[in-house]
Amino acid sequence: MPYYVELQPQHLDELADFCNRNFQFHSGQFEREILQRRIFDDHHYLPDHGFLLRDNGTTVGFMVGVLRGNEGALKLFAVDKQHRRSGLGSMMLEEIETLFRSAGAERVRILNCSPCYFTPGLDPRYTEAFCFLQSHGYTAERYVHNMEVDLTGNEFETAHLESKLAKQGFEIRRLEHEDEQTFYEWMLGTWSQNWTTEACNSLKNAPVTTFIALDSRDNIRGFATYDVTLFRGGFGPTGVEESLRGLGIGKVLFLRCLRDMKTRGYPRCEIAWVGPISFYAHTADARICATFMQGSKML
Image (cartoon, rainbow, N blue to C red; front, side):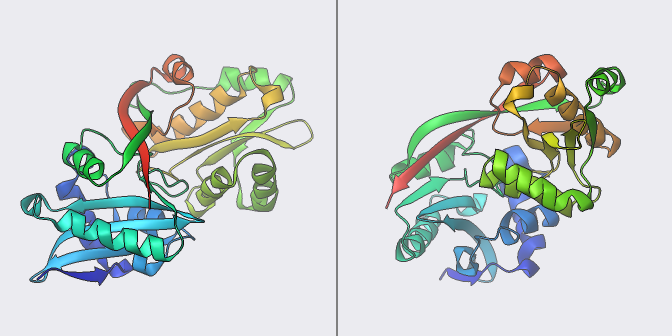
């Protein structure tokens, strides 16, 4: 008889192995540290919103959700390949929807649970998951794209571009821990709470994985971040104050992140939830690598 086990940090190695075996298109990308940060470091996460489903001592499935205000989200879930089409997914979904409903949730979203997300929606190449959610009343609302950059064939040199910006009074450098309060206040005043949380999470990385643009008065005017969403090598969020767009600041910030990833030995960068597709295509020969369905269900 299947039974639930509350997900705990000591289960993360087991969960990483389970995910790498059962997520065909993301195999090898699940790591203990990534799972820790996207699940347990999410300050909205509640212990009973993540569980393993076991049968005779073997994990046959799991589901992790998060509640943000009056909306729940399915953050990550899977049933073992050998145990699908047996009602286990429906059993877990009913459990988490009941938990969300009892906590006051009115809607449940599919994977797009910024901040602290693995993917910005459901990759429809996971056809079984797509059909499963559709059969349980989840509907598509929009599709978004990720892009990838091959880091092996380019040095992402920015010296000339940074020299031009310096003549206009701008400096590009890595965010430092001493900047934390100033950066937090600027982010919150300029961008969204979600972007603020994601970008500030980069201060937990060593080295810090955010680069900032400063004007001649040392005011922060732009930023670019990586390794705070998706898996290792995930780029975003990034932004430059509207009045300064078109000067090349965003381009340099992006390229500095790419060079940093390359230095760390990453073979590729994946840009999350892309808005300006042409910018990334022209700047770094980025290519669309995945499309994600964002959708939801009213409870």
